[in-house]
Length: 484
Image 1 (cartoon, rainbow, N blue to C red):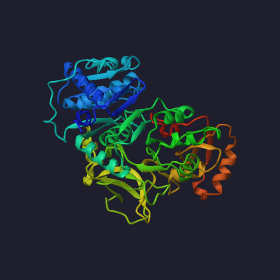
Image 2: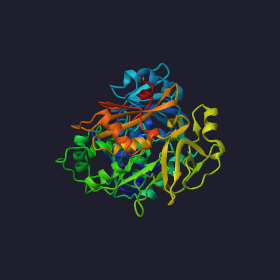
Image 3: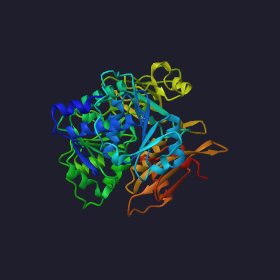
Image 4: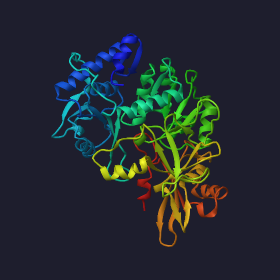
């Protein structure tokens, strides 16, 4: 993994490697940039075992910095460039990063008393590194420190080593049949493991190439696809929903795409069918967490493809559903999803108690509820923490959300539990409508009553201009729960 840039440069120096708005790199040019970046980091004191932070929007230097740090035996912690100064300072301080790579927009928010800032425009433009060898590095070396979103408390650093990344890339390459002819269009942000590993490192390891897309805009997106001619991209349900909701006259040349990937959150089966019917490209839905180095299940490219499930366990990984005692449950019975195998993280950075809890029994406890269908495809029911208990009845918000998504006027839906003095909790739904759509909250309640048992029907539905989302476009429910 560490020597990948040099290997590609030796095999095919003029071959296509990486393209972005701010530069295009052949294999030889990419290797030279990585070498120069490593020399730059070394001049700033970075050495084996150190942490380098990167706070940039998606651009070529994000990927160059990754391999530059690895060349020195250092690890990288990517920082969301939208974070405020206190939020960025928390991650930089918690990770003990010695340097942070910035641009003019992020520099002021990334400055701390203990770190040195390096500007991206100058990062890889110097002399290459001719002194550092990578042969002494081993797979157990820390490679990435990916911070969780912090929706249940302070963000935690997920420790991913080179062995985790190697196992994940091998798994992705095998499942997606990636080859040198593949180009990944990078849509998701590079400060997430999905963008870094599924969207970037895996295709590069398969001798393919990566094109970094501009900031996602559904009205401009298909023009980028036509220009870059990718064979796949990975996105989240909200993005696919926006693309499906484009006006009927919107044209799209999707002939270069073999498939597209959906992750981050379960996607309703009807939404998958609508996208596939309109654009003629199969969505391969999968499931995973940063704590398992991105992906653990995937609907197969060939054979049985089951919308509404997240597919089968990826090669080299084990996925099981267990009860509260850790015992495996029979097919069809919901329980907590646990993951085992070489992609499971080393633990959380400087959090031994939380690491032990998450990795108890030698497997990763995901906090997700799911079950296996008769074909052993995993069906996600909901997050354990999102389950609503109304008058003693367990209610899974995803079931109600799926009903709301099936209404032609609904663009987005989120269901949460709100405290109630009589029932403990009641069901409340929030929806955003498609452009030009019109429907009342009473009509949506009536729609739910035709498909849901009475106790599952929301006590209230609120129509919003838009729903709160995190940095990758995934709907977040915390702000909705906190509303009066």
